[in-house]
Length: 196
Length: 196
DNA sequence: GGCCACAGACTAACCGGTCGGTATGGATGG
DNA sequence: CCATCCATACCGACCGGTTAGTCTGTGGCC
Image 1 (cartoon, helix red, strand yellow):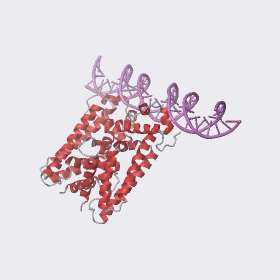
Image 2 (cartoon, rainbow over the protein chains, first blue to last red; image 1 turned 60 degrees about the vertical axis):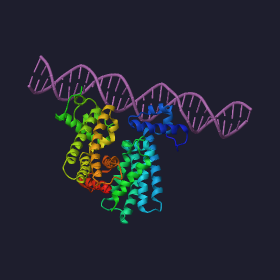
Image 3 (tube, helix red, strand yellow; image 1 turned 45 degrees about the vertical axis):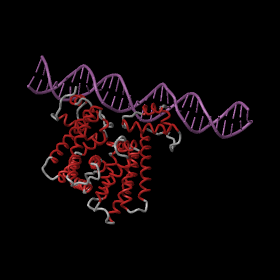
Image 4 (tube, rainbow over the protein chains, first blue to last red; image 1 turned 45 degrees about the horizontal axis):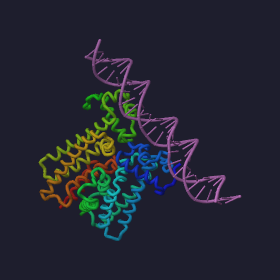
């Protein structure tokens, strides 16, 4: 039976950290439970003591990233700043936080379709909430006449998130730009595209 | 032993078409060779008569999409039109052709990391050529003073391709827009972002 | 007769998950 | 202060099922 674990305990945390690294490196399906427990220096008994299934590990990783990004978006979008500033900050922040958790992000966008139906539903629902929160910013600016209405807000959001979701395909830590610089540039592209 | 097959013969073509559909629906790792041959109405003997391995199927699908898009980009980029028109056409075309071959595109961007090292290298090299061809258009416009130089051309290309690569995550054929309309909108966003 | 295009049974490896057992340490009670 | 007890944490052998890939056979066409 799966036990509650809120990140408590050293072993489950180590298992999760190692699983994250291995999933990001080799992919979910190509990483066996045996490899995870070997790398963590425990056995399968330990893993199944803390997690209900291999899918649970994935779900745990997803939850971590979703909670973090939703929280950061809430903070940025809820400030009293003008909408253009809020959108720019949110657009840059989602890039930075995706880079800072690049392993989580890699797994997320590569392996989401591996989840079971009910877990997939939950993840998609949370993802949609995030999308809608972001889209509301765009629409607010459009209605205020600050942003162009040439493109539907939905498409604008997909356009920006597309780049974010693909970050792990081309971002290299040893590259010349810092995460913040990349975030600023991509946010700048978005704001430029929205100029009336 | 793997035979040469350039799409010739009815059976190998059917196998490839069915494999494409199944890989797009359920993912590469979750689709067994047995399921493919069952759906095609043949047996494993036939599959391994034409293809060297399961990975070969993937590689074949990749090659098909890469060749098609490279060819279409060459046609668009090589016209004598002004650079802004060429870039807009290329940006819209890559969206349209990705939607028209949405199964190939889905598999491509979801399962690329499943390829063996040497095949991955080949695919990446072709992909880079495509990226560079596209980037050259952006740089040409920047040097001509038509496009903003605020953002490095590389980032601009990644930004646009990010959206393209994620198309399969949100594109629905039953949606209100035609592929061409979506392509026009996304190309428009790119061109707007590049205004000086 | 021989070769091409498959059939289909087979194998060896591996996989996620289970289960009975054990070590440890803190609480309890005498 | 010690004996008992029990929950928690973890071990590791094991299982049923699945997988990619192989190999021998065979029917039909040249």
